[in-house]
Image (tube, rainbow, N blue to C red; front, top):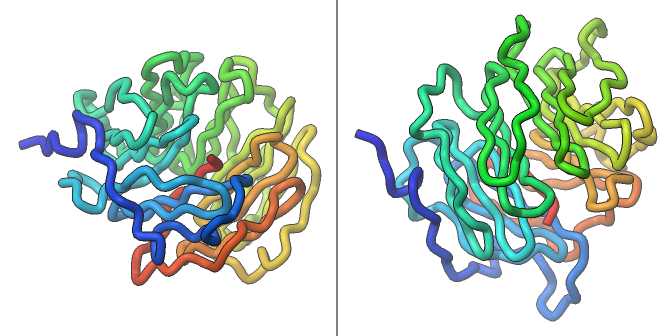
Length: 275
């Protein structure tokens, strides 16, 4: 029987545990922030991001796989397409009523905050609210599952990237190259779009390749970091690399998150987004 607690209604706001879930210094001014999502529904805030609740007490059908933010709130998405809302984020639909052949692996918010995309491991795409459908990678013979998804700044297009570094562009997204024919040191884990005609592709070992207008950057500490997510800054001139233990490496315009490192106590980070 479907578990509708997490799939079909907004998640309730929980009081933040500032010792573990909010890593900002008390009294610090708002700054660029990052939201980290754990597989069990825990949400960790870094920098200037605000805590609006998490899904630790929700009945999840599958683990959380993605997080996306809007002004004053954020969404969590589970592998079965369940979507939970927190703060000012509105519910626009979930893929739990869709016959998914493969799990959801990524999520991106529409620029106006009134919709979102859910991307499946097989290249399928579910669009809700103002998020427009420009096609999906499902019709392509993918050699490896989708590992990341990123929308363009205007929301008029998006990129899929697979574990072998193949890139598929739709709408106003501009293809600038891929890693498919290269000997990768580790599987690809994500993609982050620049402000125009470019993107970064991140591998699990911290290797990042720049394409198009993306600047080649070298985040400090990335060589020793096992990466699960790459997150573009608001100006799209830098990014953060995020590890499963909540460790963050900043590059370009991305500031180092203020405050102490998060205490996850066994909660593994699986996804991240800017706030």
